[in-house]
Length: 74
Image (cartoon, rainbow, N blue to C red; front, side, top):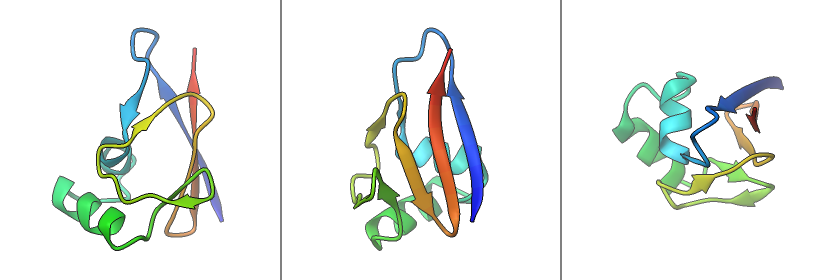
């Protein structure tokens, strides 16, 4: 399993799930991110997440495609 981190900007209280998948290049497009999420291939904090625009905050953990992503902030 690959462990990744995503750091929120100081003025950014959250980021949407589909945006993280695109920024970290797990999904090639927004449509691809939506498909991954709606096909129940994404876990957030050990629970299947089907909301494309789920707001992620500090300490949330995403699991997708053998990758673990932890949300951090400054």
